[in-house]
Length: 307
Image 1 (spheres, helix red, strand yellow):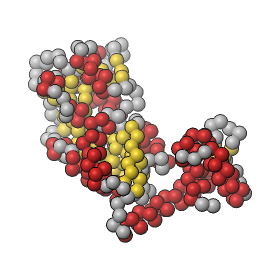
Image 2 (cartoon, helix red, strand yellow):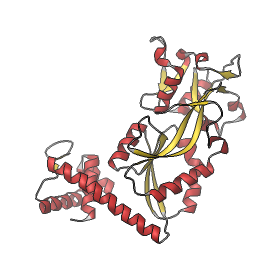
Image 3 (cartoon, one colour):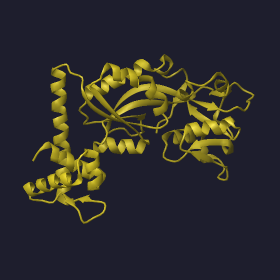
Image 4 (cartoon, one colour):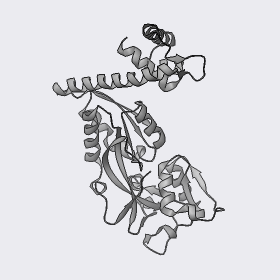
């Protein structure tokens, strides 16, 4: 038994497919299959039922996979202790980030992080909250940058910033600061199902209480919603970081909410058994260093909306 065999087992368990698992491990499928077969022969049990598609663990395999997770986690912890004793900053950090944060936050700090820590490999993937939480649980990700869910008891949270919501529209309003009831639900452009920002907006505007025949256009992209609003096809609500690079004309189309202003707390989440503590602390510090000062604490009278 060796570490590589355990890593191959975890890859098959994640992908439930030998070819995709081999691709993720950067080896050929015959190599991966042979290594797992040798481990099964050594243990005297089948870890995977290959007759099923997708591949699933056997009853004994499920127990071995759980133990493999523990072993690999402790090996990672061992490496962290070694690096810390040498005062070496290196390693790999797999980070998931939600699409309504990624385009606006990543450019603020990535280049600086890369220059400061050239021996740290960041592997960043953009996906929705549910996928991040699942991958944190099964070890596919080390950390997630997202809006903390209501129940985060299985995770460690490292708060980063507080981000207000703003209305974006070229249409005129009589008042300077808007209330949720000032927004015509039938005109509201929303992200599609699965995006946590959508559910936060729906709760803030209490859309579920509105008439069911209201027309609703949904998209997978905030940029699409903004472009539609620019063309007078509706109004949308954006996270304020999305406005940082707006032109002067675009800033004139941004309307703020009256107190209590809605906002979301963006955090780094890790699984409670996570071991790469030092790398996450460095990531957190780098992000906070490059976030505009105004987002580092909740502003005045605000109300927070979670996932």
